[in-house]
Image 1 (cartoon, one colour):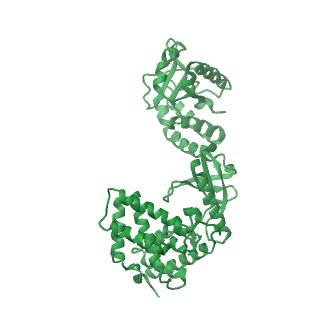
Image 2 (cartoon, rainbow, N blue to C red):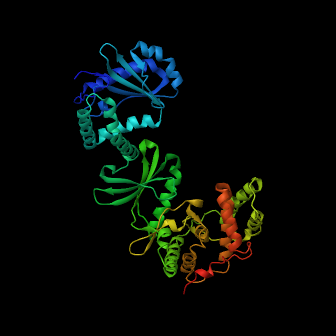
Image 3 (tube, one colour):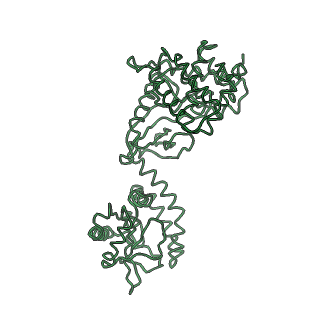
Length: 473
């Protein structure tokens, strides 16, 4: 079949290797016209996918910074036989075509889009994904053939019929583009997004040919140093016998734009959900297990040359105080917390440091089917080291609701009642967290200040009123 198709007609041709040559020549012609206005020009669409039938119309994508500069080139484009489509109404996607008015045919569709836009990435990802996955490409071809048979004279119906599978394939293509350069990617038989969790990472459940089940986390390359540190922290925890996901691999993917972490998958449910199904006694016993697990984490020593915790942490405290003092938002009891943080600095004196988790919350504890606990999502606060008691403060936020769990956590960690200074230090960290919340979510933080005042007798009693209520013998 010759290149070109009448308007509205749907007719597929077998893949023709000459389509690539036609595209190359036209791209060279377009480069001469666009010059520096274009940042890239690529052959896209079905004629750029090896081995599948396509309408004999060459699709070309042109990436530009500014559409206004393209408008200035329209006289040259018109002279070369390319004219702007008046019917194309896709935002940020200008279509120019070679119109043969006598034959009423088109042979080239040139899509002009913003560089690095969703449209640009979709054009390239779709093409590259289907070229890398011939079986998927053949499935796409079968749908095209079926639709072309049904709608030989209705291009709109043909296109609408592809919308569903194209959206699905674009989603798969986006994932493929991000992950395909991970070593061993070809062994992945299943890659499903994981939407749970507060992290900004993109997370995926992965199954491999060898029946391995993995957790894959992907972050922007700008976070490389942080993610590398987190991976090294997890490696150390694994080596120390902490029950958790095992480290598998770490590196760069997405053509240098992303960093990935690969871990073993843990079956189970986060403790935040499990607790809602438990009796008070069961909540307390789960807390005991969580406290014993935290002991294992804190058995890993900090480096001998670690910076003083007191000096490092109080600098952060002072930053929060300065922010509050200059903020237009003031709370009724805010000054009480500020004075507490200033007056009780001595509580930081001589605090010993260990390896820490830094986000030891119920949502980061996985209760496995056999009732044991695994921990996930370490955070590199102060390079992964600090006062071990710092790890108790996140649980305190929902302490009243989970009083039995928290009490079990404390007693399991200390093998009984904690030292007398424990709650003083914990209150200091909780007060710091409240000051941090003013910067992040001031309206919600007001609730936490009210909690502190009601639980702790206006900062006069460091032991929460509900702590004794959580005790079960």
